[in-house]
Image 1 (cartoon, one colour):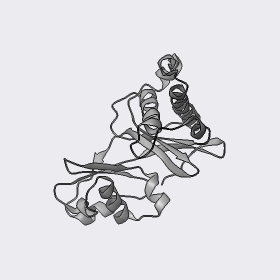
Image 2: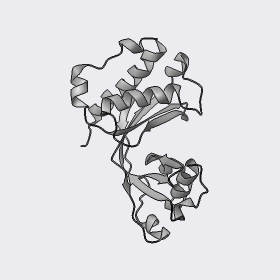
Image 3: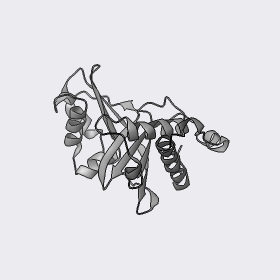
Image 4: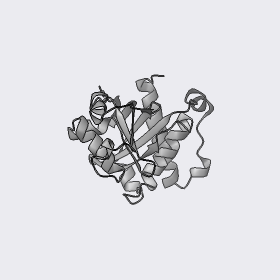
Length: 199
């Protein structure tokens, strides 16, 4: 299912409301309305990314579609704001300045490859997100990340390995799985919401 820009505005607003309810100690009273629950009831993988002054301020999500979309947005937004281990919890002052990005994922699919070079042929930077999994460690990078850093396909694979806590060439190992997915990405920019063009 493809979501519209209006959907993106609704989901970003939902993410903001979910964060604000924690900051205002009104989390227990926060409940999405019935129309929103009905319209965004499909299970989808979701990441919420928070930025402050163009720098990452939190990013957490769910790769697999284990939650309904509205619920995944609420959970991911709160986790990104208050439970990303790389950052202290978001403050009310920071909340006023952050920008919010919601990425809605397709289910990941394993890339079948006879040789490591096959991975390079089956990945498109800015279209695909990547997951590296060796059974003990796993790491994920969203489709928009390599474009922000001007990585090519090999650098994208290497950095996903390092995100997983593995050596950069782990994607060449027989015991590593490489999976890819795509995403629709809605982002706050200059006071409005845009859909990022990824491919």
